[in-house]
Length: 370
Image (tube, rainbow, N blue to C red; front, side, top):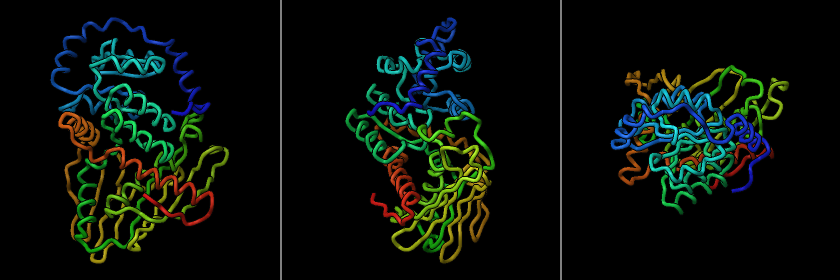
């Protein structure tokens, strides 16, 4: 793996300085009996990065999973480690800093590692976790480019461990119904799609989401949602892309794109228009067919999906997407089966992201060769 970008190195340095290396927490011996009982029944997950998504979604999901539990933590903030260890009964021996991350190789309590770090760190820490003998879920986007993504896949194959991407929407009934309707051409062939996701918001000053070298910007942070939506609704791979990028608030988005739009072309002539950005709210997946349509709006959020077709309004039960996603991967590990969101799925999305970058830079219609 290539050396860290300066900003990534600084991220680790700052975290390690705060942590002072490995953690010295209050005694957690009270957690041991509970922990040992869970270990006998479920696969142990370690969360690498305890930011907002881990706190609000993944941690709570691991409280409800049937085949998984939170067995380890990796963070650069001792205060977070202490809070999490108490809430989730994680023993001190299973808590790591970024300085001693590779020591998870010696911990049999940790079966699976979930990478929830800034985008530029996904590939490195996924590879290190795989080489430590752990199965890995990597949060989206899989990597900074398709080459990094492929290196992750090759590492997983070499060490005979499973690699999946955090594509929770494959477990959502609204999205699964759109997949079924589109791929089976229930309303005839799809001829046009719109898949877009944007928020009217501003990342906090100093956030890595505003830093180019750390994978900030609208394209890296949001694009995989509409790319995924187009691919799994159509059930085919796009063959060309054109794209544009713009920034309205240049005083804020000094390094990264604020708005990106693109058009995917499929071999049969189907077009999909997409937008991602931080200046306007949109959350929509639409597919227009010969004999009808399918639409999800809201579409990509954690909760609150709503949908309809030319014939009916969807009324599915809302599910805890992350709970289903995590348990499915644990089942795949237990039964030695491939995940529906395996690494190759993320790699194909990164091929599209790479082509969007090239289309913007060159101002040309770019081919996609998967």
